[in-house]
Length: 451
Image (cartoon, rainbow, N blue to C red):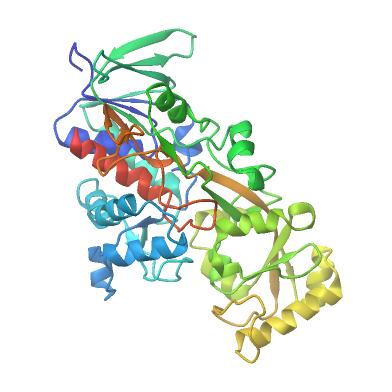
């Protein structure tokens, strides 16, 4: 680094590493500051299912899939009932394919297109992932690339606690807290806040998303709203603070993600009364609040052998299996006995479900997607709702620059991922698979390209 400090300081070693690598590619010196010693396994990027949307990518073309950023934006607006920030949706949709191709070409990340099932809300197969479908593989790859890049320094553990500005309001430095309790001021003209949202702060969660406040938090312990507090001190605007990604498929026994592929391949969710209570295919995020509202805020996902085999491609699901969280039964009555659910209800639900799946009778909850008929033997996993991460944050422009309420940019300040406002609208229902990773990686990529 020069005596004037790094060209860019990145706070957060998840998706923020994309900004560090993109900036280094452009010849800039970068300092990455990360609060957690265990970030490679414990940040929200690492805890994701590694789904990165790319609308119009070469993998789609090779698979004969006709997609475009415009179609992606239409899906976002449809899922959010028109409440998402359309400008940012266009920005991220437009960068999505160049982003995944840069990750593959420049960083040699082994991406592939997910074609075995479709996530709720996506009208095209556009999610790209890595083998194992787990975010740790993405973070591991990014960390290895950072280690090989001489223009990037990684400071761990250390926490960026403040951003300073000069008399004209331009960023001129950062304040970093070190483990021994001391602080250090480092000069710089550009800062990317990639510290995620506020999901680990129970008071903020209770204030902004009370319907999910009692659910388990399944994210980084350092997602406590640092970007919001830093931005507020500098006069930044924030939006969509009531937006979040929930998940209705966290194993109660293991605390691992069961995964919604179980549902999209044909599984169903029963509450503790042995009954279904909605269209599970609407989305795993909004179903978290629906599950939280059921008796004791618990339920069971029911699948069969075929679905089980298809879901083994997910690291999270394999970990759930290895934990012993699945119970197997040879029939509906046996399943009720194994789970402790009311037998009459379980037998009735699974028998009527067969009629829905065969199209004989319409599902009263409006579910139309049943990949196949569930057949015995059945497996069931007890689940609880979870909060994965918040989706609102600092308002940013097309280059990830943080904006004031007036619409002017705070010169030198950028935000990405959960630190920035997202594209999920309000609440949980607007969340699409990849709405976490795309702003995390995409806005970091755009910020580094602008500096």
